[in-house]
Amino acid sequence: MSIAQISLPKGVGPHAEKLFDAITQASNAHELNRAGGKAEGFVLGLESTKAIKSQVAESLYVAFDDAASLRATELA
Image 1 (cartoon, rainbow, N blue to C red):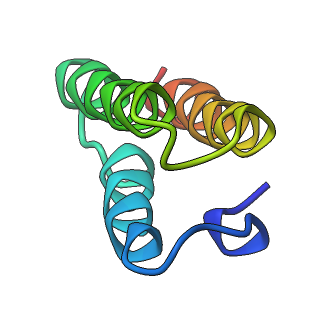
Image 2: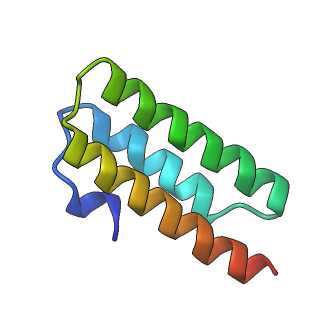
């Protein structure tokens, strides 16, 4: 799943894409872990402030997690 497939509030999409790109372009495990942590915190912040619905948050978590898992496999 890509970020573009998720309906996000105006202004949130570019930040989510940037985080997604950081995950998919990580050059080592340390960068990947850091990017994944930032993405998780980003979603948690949006969800905590009720800027997005829980369904949207779950979709973002899945998209970031899937991307991180794929990148981890590529780096191994």
